[in-house]
Image (tube, rainbow, N blue to C red):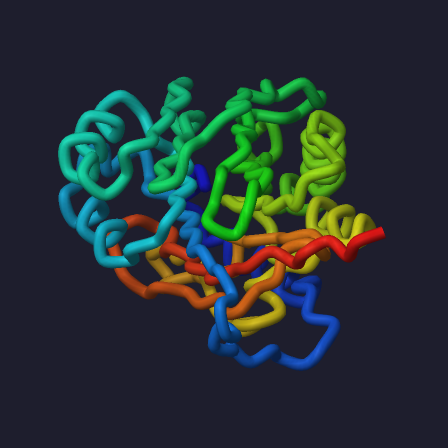
Length: 273
């Protein structure tokens, strides 16, 4: 998320926390069944201001996920991550944009159908990445998002909180409109909301947020202000009913203002007709 060093975040996030979605009991992790193929995914906003930080590279290596989706990458991040993780992730794609607008997918599995979905919605700031990743459980349609921060065009956080939820919903609606509905789909990244328009839209389409389901009280973003540290749950992994989550957890490591979110997943087999 873009950083706004203002104590007004305290008011905004105290209001935002009341809207966090957690509609059911916390789900427990489970072990894979016999011969059940699984794969792992991490989403992580690495913070463009930390360009090339070796601790971030090491956090990603230790997470040891099969697929990594990153937000706020840039040319320096591409150089550092390619140099430090090429052995672990032979399949890599980086989309470069100004400031916090870059994103990337790193994968142990082959990637195809890569596409950049530009910010077509009025008020949208960042592009999304879509791809089909050929996991050991089958093909997965993957979406890497960095949705509009809760900041108004004039820089107000309070006005941004109350005025940008509809933008994030419109962004998600537009992104889903570009996808192949025949494929199991995972939407991962920095949603810039703990509960709001984008997550509600996905829920209406049958998606579930793994962070809210498995670790509803976990914060994925933190920022230190002159009046103390503020935290919120801004990063999510939302999957449709064809994706089966086994565990979702937050990795409380790294120097970025965000922390990685890790998931172990499987794919539900289609029933023969």
